[in-house]
Length: 381
Length: 199
Image 1 (cartoon, one colour):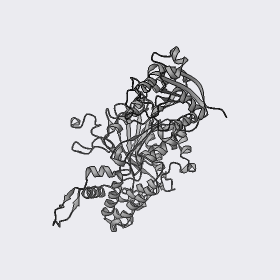
Image 2 (spheres, helix red, strand yellow):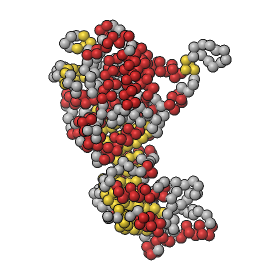
Image 3 (cartoon, one colour):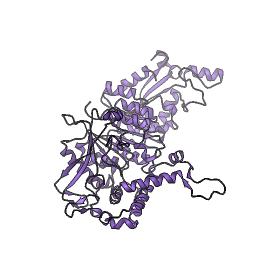
Image 4 (tube, chains in turn blue, cyan):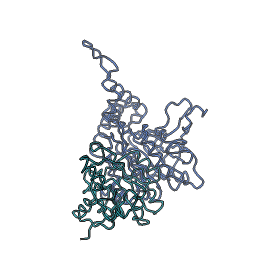
């Protein structure tokens, strides 16, 4: 069976579930009496348990970071580019863990799972998680897996921010930290885009005050619009021009043509929005964007990023993508400079690309070479 | 930069020191400093290919344009700041030099000597900008936009209130007697160990 997957793929993978019966208290005081986390692992945990790498996913990501769920599965996990035998995160020597964040919608306890007390979907009643909550819940997962230290914690975008939070909150757990296309906190513009996305969802008549699952409705139009706006901010203007230009998918520019015009870019955005709206839970999108808004690495240190990062003991790889305007290179440079001021070991590169914020997910020779070379220092040598 | 220059620089870097290598290239020299001098090094380079190669040697490297002012580096964070044969490529060499002696306790700077007799001959007799094996590029198509002589550099140090701790000069065949006797005429390149003047 496995022969049909590429040689450098982790192949067929199956998600696992960890159950936690102790109450989990969120940063905002809310308590979850018990919860589940769904996760995947690739590679083997070494006897010394010193080769574990934690992958943190981005806003719409999941625990499915690499490999395929079935032999017919045409789409590998979201970071298959980087994870596999012989790839940057080499599963021949590293044990890779990726979990679905608490409050997400891919299997971990979240708005689309049942509240054990009522047997009804949580819906809008699920507590608002923050990045620090995810870090603490991932630490519980690590302990569940018999891991007491990560050789590396890594991720892009929101996942990169989570990796940085790990390095600050549990310094003695994190040997190496990789934050790609990340930021130390969200700007007013970032929050504004998130608010537009939430507004799109909340103003959909099918939103049903967040209880659409119980009501049997689905705010698909709102979620699609939210995704269209979000997706737009992940691409660069040059990248979009190259890919779509002013090409029409339907209609023509011929004089007298009065048909319906559909530009390629419109068709693409509609497709992305529609597909996402049937796959992603609306409440989760609201919670995730809010968790992003609330993220601020320096919040506990009176706004001093240097003081916050001073606590970490990790070696850092910080990389930005030149055409990323969601979290532009300048935001990564803020992190880099704070790390340098704090006397931490850090490597920084700005990858030249038209791929925009999505750069950390897409092929690019320099990016892939950088990640692969840097990862040589991670784990037992 | 040839091996003799680098050996001199190597001798001037204290064992176990913290070194910032500006324009570290592929990281070869910084890796050598780490392996032979046990230094903790950070490299700075602008070229992504160089960054990747230096990273493959286990080094920490920062992609940055030295011309942007090196603001990311805090005062006195390093024992030694290196700038090997890159001074002549900088937009504002004097600003970079002043910054280097702020960031490091000491700085080591090397550059090709434009006062070398062959350059003078070229300019004096032919009336054209010098070209040689060491300076193979035409004046209009070269990264070297700020050539200086040994004497120019020493004058700049005086202006910037920078002390010269040590100077080594290299002529065609190494550290020759002629080179040390009349460095501005016979040295093909010069290496200076400098620091901010007291008070």
